[in-house]
Amino acid sequence: MSSELKLVMDGDRAAEIHRAGGGLLLRYVYRPDTSVDESARPYAHPVNTLAGEGLTNFRPNDHRWHHGLNFTINCLSGHNFWGGGTYRKADGYQMRGDHGTQQHTGWVEQGANYLAHTLDWRVGAAGELLLQEQRGLTFAVLSPTVWSLRWTAALKNVSGRTLELGQYHSNQGLAGSHYGGLQFRGARELLDDHMDTAIGIFAEGGLSGEAAVHGAPARWMEWRGQKDTTLRRVSVRFESHTGPFHCFVRRNNPLAALPFQYDRDLPLVAGATLNVDYTLTFSDA
Image (tube, rainbow, N blue to C red):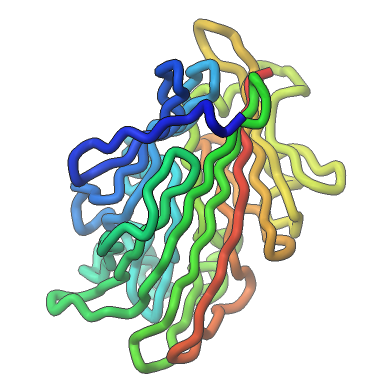
């Protein structure tokens, strides 16, 4: 059913995936205009279900550096690619002028079912290049109520030295703060379960609820909600194809992330490549 999709390019800034009948599924902004202290990076927003229900939030008032659906690294050898304040044990969260950016450098392929492009990860006033990435986004309509996005990336260390990839749980001892990797900032309605046990956060192994799912190793987790106005039930399923990940969830934001490392920083030696491979499935009940 993937032939139902069409690609619409919005100048030299964004790519949109629509149903052939006209409904927008995803807008992927590959040249963002967000500020430096939000660690500017490509993002997808809005992301909608096939029925047109909005699933993502962009620059929410509680964390303006949460940008819909995006991939990033919280701490990259002392540089902040997440946005906002950088946490240190000694003085907590502070703006430190250490933000990195992801910059689109070229298209590899453009199509309704597959987008691939290259990015440079740069830091500092001189724009030091740390990583070069090739990213692929694969789109498929699976049924009249379900579509999927497979997000793959190969990030090569071109800095000439070993880079440490981590987050504040692994390198600053801030328990539970293992956000990073693929990040999904959800629409506000997703946090309201109105005492309905079918709504909430679930993960492999029968886990349910934020307390049980957060930090648990799993190959998949799922966020189930209900939208205002239409009262339509929706779900977002997050899966990793490279093995279990330690789920990161914040019910009251709402936020989900699929970190590629957890309790210790991941060293990436010069010339080595980090590969990530995720699938997100979006459903209308």
